[in-house]
Image (cartoon, rainbow over all chains, first blue to last red; front, side, top):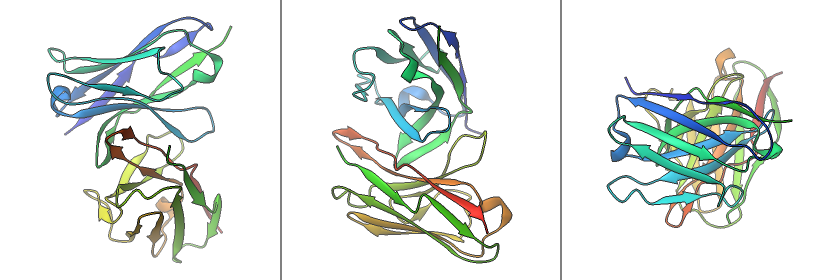
Length: 117
Length: 109
């Protein structure tokens, strides 16, 4: 069974940093396109970032997070990461990881990030 | 950037009836269109990809259609577990673009 489990969410002050993790089982992170998607409370879905498969692992970001967030992976741990810096109140959301391709599937259960003083 | 617009925002339908949800793209996305179902407190679940292909394990009651800029998700014989929020998403692997619509809430009439 393919499973993605996100961890690392929590309460952080504006301007602070947080690193999210997405541990995969049943699939190899490095062999798949992997994305982060977020959902602000009571709002819709927003794609955040993607890392391509393979040794190059090309990365792309939504304009709203470019320059502040960094997606990466650790192949030895089969884990995807999202390093979030210079956090703002509008980054408050549940963050999901998902395998990406012709549609996003599967998704993790999500981890809540709250940016507040 | 491709903008995805879903209609209606809320759809009230009786159990056993059929629901038709619409999604419009501001520019052609060919058939690079997916549909998701999300229930409260849960992650989204992929229903349809490539505009009309059902994902693994998805009931044949879910039918996706369309191409270019106009897409439809039809759910027949609505069951209690179908009442949820539905999102469409366009995906373009190059340049990467994965825009979601704002969602349609399907509620019990």
